[in-house]
Image (cartoon, rainbow, N blue to C red; front, side, top):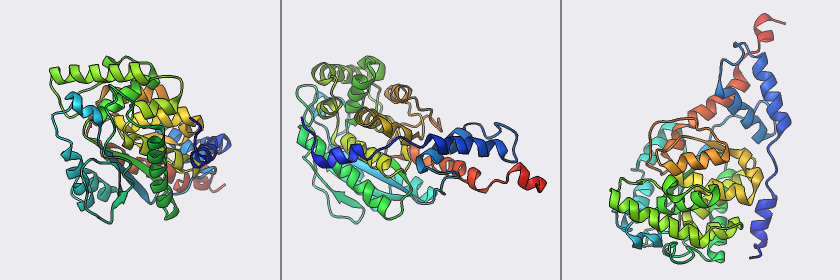
Length: 350
């Protein structure tokens, strides 16, 4: 497929993060009034934030924005989840009402919450937090046919990038990825298997806590989808195996890279989207920060393939952006260390 110009423009707008700014950050860390290396991995994170911003010290992280992309999945028909698809819509309403775990964590770290309907099968009521970009009422069954057409996939990507661009234009300085969709860990496992080359059994987990029989069906569905749709074309792989919310998160990631804003990844679904985004635009890798390590096996496979080390490991597997939100204070601290900590020369009065 020939990609449409808006997507080409988005991909071409992503330049590599600034290595010189990262070097300047490392030099500043070495000059701080702290023992060398005392800040551990915060020093690496600070250097990355400087590279993303293109300057040292990097700007303060003061206005995080969470995008929860939501969609349903045709592969649900393979009995891979114990929950009905109506739960997707129920959770979207809960996000909009401010009563989900993601809302509680977002309030705790001062993050805005935007909910993007790109493929929820159930009709949703209007709400100020809800962005409507419903491409279709859920994907097709990835185990028997492509989950999305090329046009549907493009539309979902651009819906995600559009929300991210809107948030950035109003001051958001770190994007946090969230997701909601019953059966979306099946699609995520398929994407991760396809992009990493791992076997379906290695990357397919229990999601919401399924039993052994359902897990076996889930692995079979992932294997069937990968056999049908995995290939050398990353866009075709995303369209064949992904959910509409995965495609939307690809758009969020690409928009963050194009705007030089860090993108804080959540769990297995964000990892799957990140694999697709980096396959489409390799430079977007420099703008990704892994918020946490989900207990889903595919999450670790995705992070390993991307070369990302998670900031937190709290045995979470909820999704919604919850793990990434908990990492926001760490991002803030890494930027603050470079901006606000005195150098040894300052302390000594040199």
